[in-house]
Image (cartoon, rainbow, N blue to C red; front, side, top):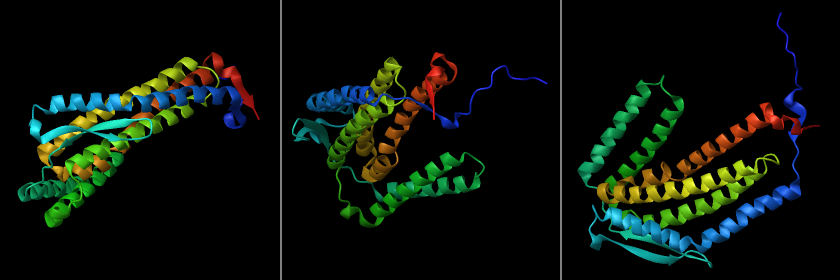
Length: 261
């Protein structure tokens, strides 16, 4: 009968020791300067995004149908956004979208043995789009938003997400163990950089969809492909960081740092 040469203690009563003073100082050094720099550079950042966006969108949108607007965001900063003409859907387009939604619903119920998380996500998206189609079918003249208002709302919402991610990324990285400062910094910067790039690219893509295919897709873009996707990649990058720490603290040279209750 094979026997283990080493038997480790159960993990139930072990914990990582944290020096709270050092950890709090590290968190403040990551969060506070980054937040101040971000707010001070927000006008330049959004100006770069909107200028790049107008340059790319000018290939499909006439110059007279869009322009850049500057507005106040906070005491420290202003922000810019692209204001473009609103395109409303036709009746035939609404009916075509409703028909496709019904077909997708039938497909989901027929293929019940498929991926349940994907089916739930698809059902969520289809229901939202169906509600949007029905709204435009019966009350299109009462739709309260324009493409320009959505553009402003998107960048204000995205700016809030960027600020939230600075705080969250700083907290979740610094409060795991005492070592690995390099990987903590890499994870923090990776989350911020990915969020900035992803948010900017998605902004330009969403404006293209709204102008090319109408505001019928506004609810779908906002509720399904909006902030929920941001937290998905946040968790993904954080999971890579946690997995790195697990390997170090479980099997690497740092496994001796565990404290026992």
